[in-house]
Image (tube, rainbow, N blue to C red; front, side, top):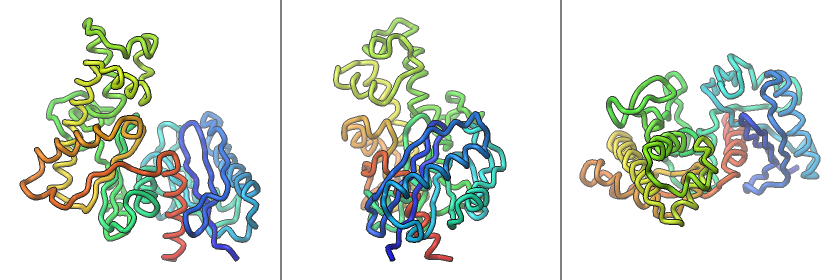
Length: 323
């Protein structure tokens, strides 16, 4: 019997499920809308439906599915599978693991979505064969995951890896978490959008205003890439600022943790040329202690949109093997 698992990437707008074999091949997928407004019970029904559709579409026997892994947003307890709080879903203390197992009768394992993305890169992507990794994903916010000795590291209260909330500029911009000067408040796409709005309001010219039809709240990663191609000066300035603070954060991480590899992913990193990562690497060299970065690889993530489902599949396989 084939030893297949299900990986589920669960977000505020969509649920993606994939059937994954032992070699990391995706045998079938299904995608549906989350419809978070319908409440947690209905969302879990939809996760179960999405999984069933992926199994059906893959043409593998249901009894070949050994486990389900889920990457879910928000702080959660990976042991109990309870999502403590997920603001974009409107969830508080939702027992996702137990509820889904009741619906589908397959062992289910849950972890934070960014942890799962990091695990995916470790297992199937840029971090294969590397035992100590920090993953940093730059998108709407900035999330991180830590692999130590080949295993996800959660910390005492299961919140390790929140690199977006390292303070990199005392008294800096207010972050969504309430603090000032967090990396997320200076280098995420949301932070960049705020800088664009501020500068364009002051009269600075930028092609970004045209690319977004004046709606600067809708700056997507693809818009940044087009603005770079157009050699837009304001975009260059804002990206240089982002790389500076990402360099500050990575330099500090390397000084403290000294991983073998930093993997940079997320929508912003994926959309931009390799020069964005090169610039981050150069800035990190300025802030790391002399020699500390020697042998530390700073690389671009490889899995793209599949990082979530492949990481969730890796979680299912890892947790099944450990129990």
